[in-house]
Length: 508
Image 1 (cartoon, rainbow, N blue to C red):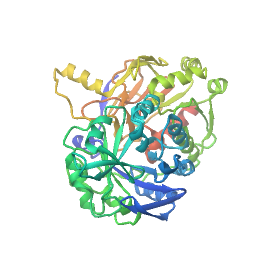
Image 2 (tube, rainbow, N blue to C red; image 1 turned 120 degrees about the vertical axis):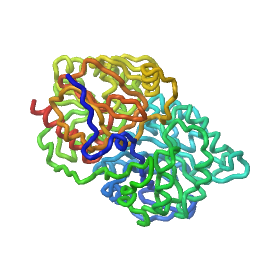
Image 3 (cartoon, one colour; image 1 turned 135 degrees about the horizontal axis):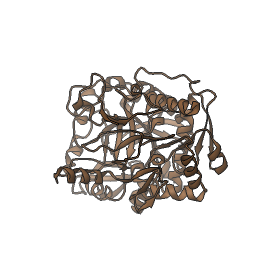
């Protein structure tokens, strides 16, 4: 079988290799209402969070960020109902934060529909929280929210604030970034308290202070009010995206205008996520799917996506039901060792291996796909299900392998995890489930720190490309298919891809 490269119709190889810079809509919540203030003060009710989120999704936003603005005051988060409602009809990634202080808090938000969890106040009070959450849910799931305020008492001139910008910590922002990016966070969400809600422009001085290498994706927010400001900041190699609140809520900035930014190096916002595709709500009518419930992450997002296009979904950890189902999906947000531990606790490991040997359809998503391989080095050497003959390794180790092959020891400028909307650039073999038109000119949502570089016993695979490395993005053998990206969070393109796969699996 031959390897085939494709880059999409009418899109240059150089352009499509870029990871898409992200525009994130920030929605601050109090109770069940959307609120906004200026510099985190004078909070006023401005609408319904679900209605705002749905509008932004329909306009083509890349991600939604929900922040419970008063959660830390009461020591609890109240986003559950909003998340459950939001993820019924919105199929882009959602980050949720507010008073997250334990594994249990994190798990509740993920099961309600969040994809990533933001932490701030309790991470400052107990930095060990970062590593404990990363160990359970994987570094890629943990977003460190930093509220920065100008302060003469800190060397950099900026202090970390907590309790929704109300309480000083005495911690220097720059030192906090340097420290925490080594502790297990997957992303930094940096907001200027001084500029937040003002629409008078973002804090360029704060961005310029970050003159060291930030090793994780950095999202910058606070003060955006004009297109030219968005363009300037997205041109910065330091950041992976920006967050906007007030200017979107007041319609001073429009997502469709932001998407059309094309003139600057490093900006890749041309395509609307939802573009002009559509999918019928009866697309999977009559198709029954079992989603494996093994305690790892955001099954609800997947269930809602499938039900939205007509599937009948059964979420279960009953081994007999999992074995006998026509099609099984193994989703997952979390670390590889915890994933395997949870499968074994529920007596599902041998059931899934039995299904594989009998060529019964199984779909794995993100962690679910990674568990299909022989082993992983995430946190410890852990054996997987062994369907595919390769191992899951940290993406930085992909760089080391590449350098050894090329005899080039130069460190690549790469931020990890690999988070954002990216393309599928390479195919190998022939698929019995997919046609090329489902991939060309489409972007899908990735969020992972570990991946598979090579595998020699696959019938078909696709890769993605990020800063010179090419981890597997989709793989297929017999009746087993794995997605490293999240089709259920990749807009209509992702739903079409997943829906077509299920139809063919169900018929075969």
